[in-house]
Length: 501
Image 1 (cartoon, rainbow, N blue to C red):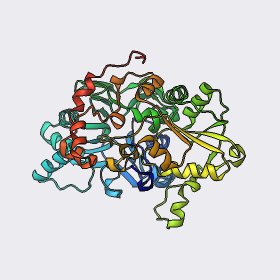
Image 2 (cartoon, one colour; image 1 turned 60 degrees about the vertical axis):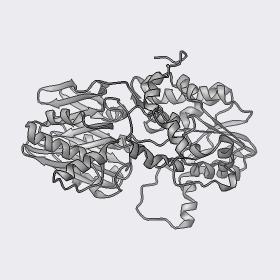
Image 3 (tube, rainbow, N blue to C red; image 1 turned 180 degrees about the vertical axis):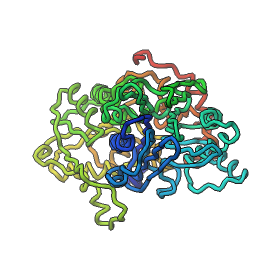
Image 4 (cartoon, rainbow, N blue to C red; image 1 turned 90 degrees about the vertical axis):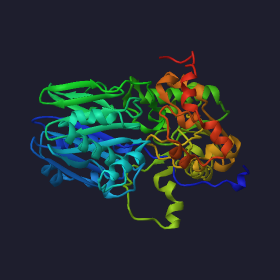
């Protein structure tokens, strides 16, 4: 593709949702849930909600906006009970409306059920059609409501929410990490591939906590116990904590972007501290993509650990060349075109003294659509940098995600349509170097068989229905033939001998 014809579209990929749950008799569960969600704010900034149960009733409050905007002292004081779940959302399926915010609440003949979901079902349309044909009137447009209504209907038949969840798990295809609340029980559920993270903690002897990331446990003083296993259902109630394996795990497929970008650096996922994983990626990137330069700078915030690793391995000085404004709340006021063009400068400001006359290595985690990188490179040049060399700690992002990351159609992914040299020209860099897939595995020190690498390889561990896949691929027929059958091919790819288990 000719650089002049390249179209740079919309913002970079957004994070996955955050879920939280606590069974805590005698504790201020609404406030603990608030702080847990605050720690998970990076996973979604569109809406937030908390549902609290008292043993007889479930009270729900949810609203659009950040956690700190949605909740205040008066609201939290009204949310009284002994157990709770919470959610912070960004939309992957379903529009950005209050109806799609979570937790969601439904009734069954034995009471009420609330649900908070992180992930994305690939068979949501078929399940929705089935519910509607059975007479269900769905109020929202997300797959999360489909899951909740399925549980409620199955609970009416089985007489138990726990058995209903177990029965529904076999019908859900895709990624799901859930917290579920009844009047007297909190449950946590993870899909059999373990695509999205979900962990268990303990606060005191009888208070159990579930969270998308361990950083949410840390902030409330809970001890990390273990991950919810793939295909596992965890139940916290008056009898303590029970763990039930509902579905066998065909293979583990943790989303690699949790390590690269989504999770907080102080979180631990499957035994790996995210900060150290990202630092390892930077070290490997410096080995594979060296450059003669004067200083290494990160793109805040997720580029920091990789930039530190790059500087350590290369021997180049580490510097802070971009300052992030950390006090910009989400706004629902649409900016005019002039402010849109200044969008990156509102969030980032160059430190001219660190950049003037220098050959700069700018390290970041990924390039999804390319728009933001071009603006940042231009900003660094305007600040006086002599050269700008971009190094990306992830491989080229070529394929859309169907499991809970908003990367839309493949035609919008700059790496799917353009050679690396064309991307370099499009973002205005002097040189551009990506991590290879093999370098990624070496840097993380994680086996290929434990990760979902579909956004880099096109090999999806959970089969995608053809109509759903085609809706995002937007490929020529020859490309479709090349992409088809790759779910089976993934199992045949050997784990590289240089990676550690």
